[in-house]
Length: 260
Image (cartoon, rainbow, N blue to C red):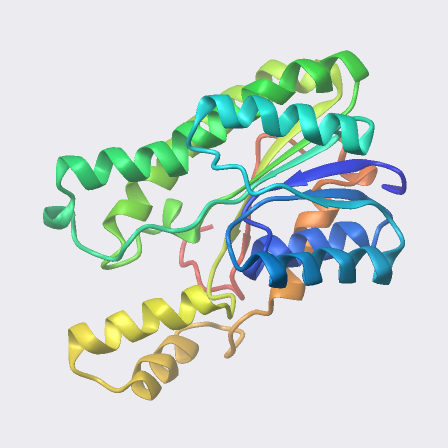
């Protein structure tokens, strides 16, 4: 049901962003990738996705923290894809730390990259989606917006700010056939999880194996989730079948959250 649609996926050169891009490509969606990394490796990735799934796959490494870069990026995406139907907002996470570690400069810088860029990019695409009568806006956040994660004070704070924004946006665009949802990863095994587990091990004086084992034991599913599982949920929320689902937050966490 998504074949022929076009999607912009930010933070899509690795991890869960790449996973969502792959899942969408598997549904026949044409892609504009965005993110950082080695130019040769990214080109190999882009060409590989195009060859595997047969659609159009473009890449632009625009720095989304800059307003003028966003405008140029959208213009390139529209021209190359023939339109934009789906936007997946996926940003990198901030450094671990406590509330007392949140100095003004760090708070401002991550607010720009994790909140302002998401809202600015989305606002730039909403008019197009409203005009065409179809749009899917999917914002990846964190299960920390439900239950704050220890030592991730910045993430809990800034991703939480997107919750009210997404709910407000969803009510404003629903009558135009545009949905806006949030997808919340729990313990999905990525390099980011390895980084956070390493930081927790260093902070606590425990081994990485001890940290990982305790983490898995706290999850009812008794394992970490896979990128593919997470991405499948994202692709569904972007589908035509999900047209009556909007303003929601879907946790993909193996049942880890203690709240409903």
